[in-house]
Image 1 (cartoon, one colour):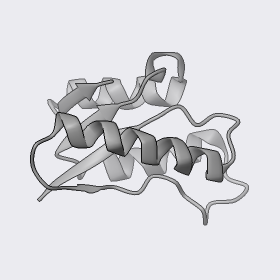
Image 2 (cartoon, one colour; image 1 turned 90 degrees about the vertical axis):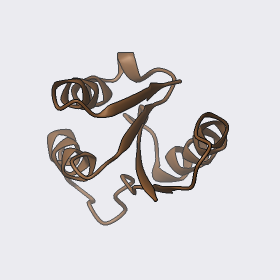
Image 3 (cartoon, helix red, strand yellow; image 1 turned 60 degrees about the vertical axis):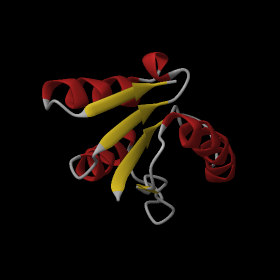
Amino acid sequence: MKKLFLSQPMKGKPNDIIKKEREEIIEKVKVSINEPFEIMDTVFDDFDGATPLKFLAKSIMVLADADVIYFADGWEDARGCVIEHECAIRYGLNIIHD
């Protein structure tokens, strides 16, 4: 089963909103990918008080194990998503854009 990493803008959003948006993105992804996949968790509930850079570092650690990366609408305006995108390109990962 492929591992799918979702890159979505998160800055300034509470985790409950991020998770709601994530569920909507997953429904879109199901249409794009015609095979079973596992969503990699990048909503870190246990990381309170961490800086944005620490969240990004943890996210990139998860990204390293992904087979496919899906970039949700608005990714190009979110600095963390842009960095994840650059990593995906530079390391030749399979990319899907919203």
